[in-house]
Amino acid sequence: MSDHPTQLDPPGPRITPQTLRWTQALGLGPLFVRRSVLEQQGMPQSPAAAASHPLAVSVAAPMQDAPAAHAITAAAQPRSATQPPPAVFSRSNTERVSAIARMGWDELQATTQACRACKLGGSRHQAVFGSGSSQARWMIVGEAPGAEEDRQGEPFVGAAGQLLDAMLHAIGLDRRADDPQRAVYIANVLKCRPPGNRNPEPEEVAQCAPLLQRQIALLQPGLILALGRFAAQSLLGSNAPISQLRGRVHQFVGIPVIVSYHPAYLLRNPADKARVWRDLCFARNTVSRAAQD
Image (cartoon, rainbow, N blue to C red; front, side, top):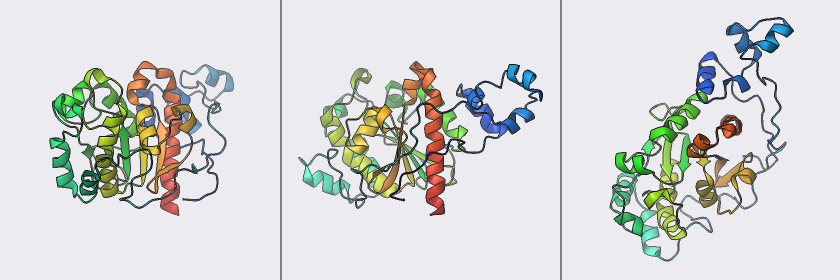
């Protein structure tokens, strides 16, 4: 990863008719359709007719909220896979943290299911370890399980999960795929549901942090997409809001991190789907550039 500022590529990945269908499912299709795709969809050729076509809305709209350049954050220097970053890991239980840092995948999952390190272990139905391919280049990190996730034992199910699937499909990814180029692995900062879906507490984040850090160390993904304020702030050790963390390449133990809004937030604030689409394109371009280096 270069130390020089990184320019966001506004065009993003190539938009095919299939991608158009997914962006339309996201409520974004009219914003991101290229002229060639519009022509394939039967857009009129005359300027006057084109202006009135239902797909011709804001095709060339500038990205008003996107920064011009995106520098790697100074606080996010590469570290070894077993060294916990500051402001994330609790040092109060050194033996537990050290043991987790040596675990393989199966032992880590079993430890997560049996965990009672904080009070959430007594109120959950089951721990939500994560799902997806262990060979995935992309890792999605959310905040905490909700009621449906607690029942099913899988992250991002229900309405927010369906929206996340549409977001991933829009850039050619699939949580069920085996191909590392298309696969994703999905996990949360917290492995247990906070009662009433309340915000995670600092002690709960601290106790779960070694589990997530070990997942990342074992996966070694090419990119982490942090969705939501708690995911971003926990990974980056930052109190900055999402609006300040978006549009830059951060790093966590040497792995690029892109920050965006949580799908549950988008269900309440659909106008911000356009910003998330830009974040997804930026993440896709970041992975592509890294593969070429």
